[in-house]
Image 1 (tube, helix red, strand yellow):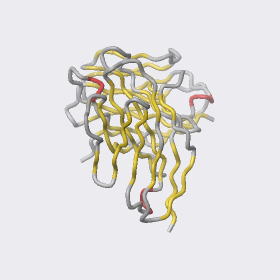
Image 2 (spheres, rainbow over the protein chains, first blue to last red; image 1 turned 120 degrees about the vertical axis):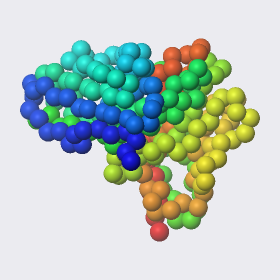
Image 3 (spheres, each protein chain N blue to C red; image 1 turned 30 degrees about the vertical axis):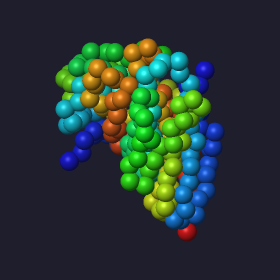
Image 4 (cartoon, rainbow over the protein chains, first blue to last red; image 1 turned 90 degrees about the vertical axis):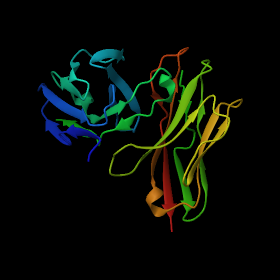
Amino acid sequence: DTAVSQTPKYLVTQMGNDKSIKCEQNLGHDTMYWYKQDSKKFLKIMFSYNNKELIINETVPNRFSPKSPDKAHLNLHINSLELGDSAVYFCASSQEVPFRDSETQYFGPGTRLLVL
Amino acid sequence: AQKITQTQPGMFVQEKEAVTLDCTYDTSDPSYGLFWYKQPSSGEMIFLIYQGSYDQQNATEGRYSLNFQKARKSANLVISASQLGDSAMYFCAMREGPGGSYIPTFGRGTSLIVHP
């Protein structure tokens, strides 16, 4: 059984389009994340939701909007796609407890986005 | 300022030998967690090992061990008896606790190649 799943795995689209990436976790975790990995493999957090509530919102253009319909799902919608949005986007989840520094994140397989 | 530094962009090791991947970190929070992840060429992020700042002993998970030197702020990953399947990118990550930001930060990664 896949713990953290993302769809689609590959996404090729034109500049200016709007697209969504879906993420689901079946681990019963309370917290989900979106990361962007650039062409140099640098991994940077974008957003984090805890029980459907936004708790981390890094400096991300407002063309990116996360949506969490329930704690098992965190979708990422991107408006007006730009060339620089081409990257691999990873969803992750963790079970938050009071000592949050110890929480291991489990990653989805990634979505490879290419903007032409 | 970079919180996680991985100074080795690439490492080579012969099969069956041990290899150490370096990681230094920067935080003033007394409570934090350190993580290592593996990213093979297939792209997924695989959790390997965790070390808490208050843990007295170095973490071990099978062939992986973490050489934690708190005073030097280093958390090097040691892979014993390297296998061809260990060839991958390896990322060190940190998460601060209540005195910090809770935002997970990743190093830029080390590419490990295991040759026969």
